[in-house]
Amino acid sequence: MPTQRLSVVVTRRLPEIVETRMKELFDVELRDPDTRMTREDLADAVKRCDVLVPCVTDQIDAALLAQAGPRLKLIANYGAGVDHIDVSTARSRGILVSNTPGVGAEDTADMVMALILGVVRRLPEGMAEMQAGRWQGWSPMGHLGGRIGGRRLGILGMGRIGQAVARRARAFGMQIHYHNRRRLRPEIEGDLEATYWESLDQMIARMDIISVNCPHTPSTFHLLNARRLKLLKPSAVVVNTSRGEVIDENALTRGIRAGEIAGAGLDVFEHGHEINPRLRELPNVVLLPHMGSATQEGRVEMGEKVIINIKTFADGHRPPDQVVPGML
Figure 1 (cartoon, one colour):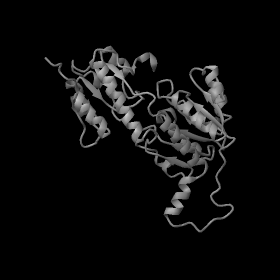
Figure 2 (cartoon, rainbow, N blue to C red):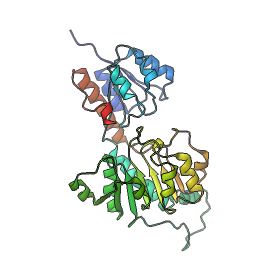
Figure 3 (cartoon, one colour):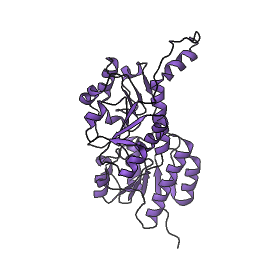
Figure 4 (spheres, rainbow, N blue to C red):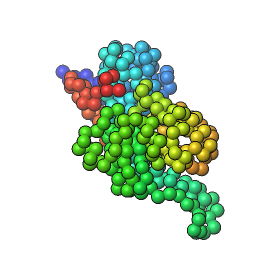
């Protein structure tokens, strides 16, 4: 007798090739149209499925997990970050959690460099002028930005993404500095020509550009708080492609408006898609809608990792990308 296929609920639309493969392997319920699930939708899903495939827009907290039915045994997150999932509560209820680490590192690092260039070279201002038909021709003092070669880049979080940023920034002639929970091995540090700072305060006070590449955890919430943002040089630029909660967004906005910070490039925001309206008004700020890992190739690879995690679990083994509370 054939083994009964796992019941899988996917909370958002995924690339067609990924959805097709899921339909071949599992009893899958796909999201159509591609809208965010309501709280009620999620509660209904966890009551009846074996596997939930959420993404960053879904809050899987203790209250929701309390409504889970006995069938739910795996939350196979579509994405690397799991700060929207209460991993400890899931584990206590016998529910495994997996993610898709490493897939978006190169794509996100590309976006870090795009944001650095966008802010320092004033690209959005130039684009807006061209699109509005206001450009009156070249002038020696027009649209002056800055040269990124030779600038000090302070990377906050030196995991896969941070290291990918370091490799790119070196090619642009930047000096690489970093602060991390643990210092890199000497050979990696040497290969990246990176200088380690044990003190975050001392590092950010000396940097020209700060790139936030650490995950959001209780210990990194508002890591760049009002006090630390005050330490930045007035010529410094802040770039964030990680999680918005790592920066005190209101304090950052105040600092830029006061001329205490030169600018910012943000792909993520403290309150999701609800962005401080004063931040939108600033010409020296580049805002993107969480596009850091948004490539066709990356999204398919993420889906493939989700499928491998589910299939491995279905075969009675530990998912290769299982997340445990001690990792966070």
